Image (cartoon, rainbow, N blue to C red; front, side, top):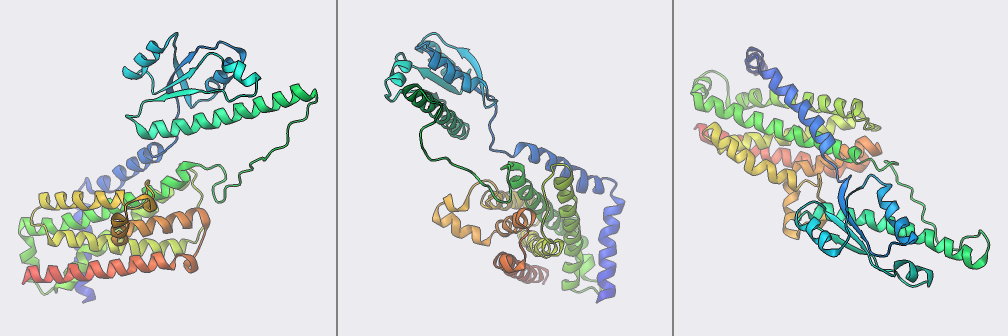
Length: 376
C-alpha cells in the first residue's frame, strides 16, 4: 500500500513540477492577496468628506469645528453658507457627513442649557455613516467635557475641575486595538480554505474530465489509495500556505505570535483535513471543471461570510447561527486568533479542535463513500 501511495504522491508532485506556472499560482497570488486583504480589511474610516454650516459664528462653535478639523477622521470639503448648500453637498455626493450648528449655540452653553448639534449623514453607505457617527459622538463628548471644566473654573474662580467619573480603558491582548491583529489571522484561514478546496476539487474532476481517471482505476491501485494520493499533496500544500501567509503576517504586518507552534500545527492540520474533505465532496458532485467552479463559488463564499471573519455570528439570525456549526472556518478562526494573540493551548481550544476533527471525519467519510459509488 505504502509503495503504491508513494508512487501516487510522486506523480502528483511531478505534475506540479512540470507545470511551469504551478508554483507561481500556488505562491504569488496567495502573497498578493494576503497583502491586499491585510491593508484593505479594516473598519477604520479616515478622511470622511464633511460639509459644515456654522450659523452661530461664535467662538464656541468655531472651537467645536476645530476639533473636527484637527483629526484625520474628517475632511472638510465645504463651508456652506446656507441649508441649501448643505442639501446639495449630500445629494450630489460631495459630502457624506454634514454638521450644522444653529444660531444660539454659544448662548445655550453659557446658560448651562443643552446646545443641539445637527448631524446629517448619507445613509446609502450605512457602515461608513455609523462609524463616522461614532467618531462624532467621541469628539462632541470631549468638547462637552472641556466646556464643563471651563464653566466650573469660571464660576469658582479656581483651576479645579468638577468631580466626575473618569473612564480608563485597558484592552487586553491588543493594547493599541490594532485592527490588523484581528483581521490578518482571519485572512490566513480564509485564503487557505479557498486554495485547498479549489485545488482538491479541480484536481480530481480534471482526471475525470480528460479520461485518465478510468485508466488509473484499472491499475493495481485501490480507490482509498487513489483518494489519499490525490488529497494528501493538497494537505501538504495547504500546510505550506499557512506557514507562508503566517510568516507574511508576522514579519510584514507585525502581528504577534505568542502561542504554541504545536497547537497551531494541530489546529491547522484538523482544519486542512476538513477543507480537503470539502473539496473531495465537491468533486463527487461535479463532472466538469465548470461545475466544480460553480459549486466551489456557491459553497465557499457563504462559508466565508458566515465564519465570523468580519460579521459577529451572535448578530446573525438563529437559523444562520445553526448553519455556521458545519463551517470549519468558523472554528479555525477562533483557534488561530487565540493562538496568535492570546497564546492559549489545548485546554482552552479543545471544543473548536474537536468540532473540526468531527467535521473532517464526516466529510471525508461521505466523500469516500460517494467517490467509491461513482466509480462502481
